[in-house]
Length: 194
Image (cartoon, rainbow, N blue to C red):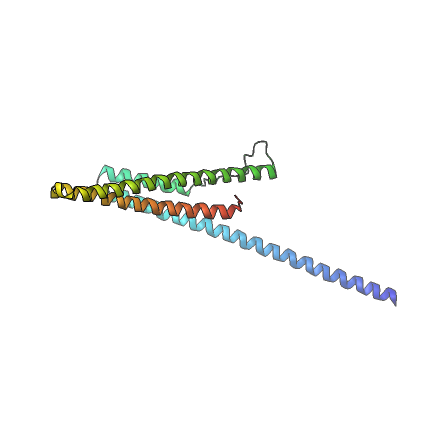
């Protein structure tokens, strides 16, 4: 009786393991087919988009009346083709003498160095913006003080220059704020502790 139970248990175990292995193989095959179909669809979509863009460039070039327009269309076509080219960074392909962990640590160190340099550039830009802000404020004060001695044209011209400078200063501050946000996001993504 014990032998019968052991044999029955072994037969059931083999049947169960065999079914599990077959199911896993089928799942792998289905995943592989789905992946291949997805790749084919992406390639077909890219080819269709490329053909559509080439047709558009041909049509635009045919409708262009001047040589300048044709040259501009050709530049845009070339830029489009270059953007579609696979220009990946190929990290890990040319490691030199570094291997695995060392290579990753080197890349991380370079990334942190770039982040630090970007931070220093934002600090220098902030100092320049602050200096410009003071200069604009002083120019506005000088304009107010000398308002009575200037002609209307001079006054309008100088006010326009100051207004333009203030607008550029505002844009520079916004750009600096955006740069700071990017640096902060990069800093958090690197998990830097300094």
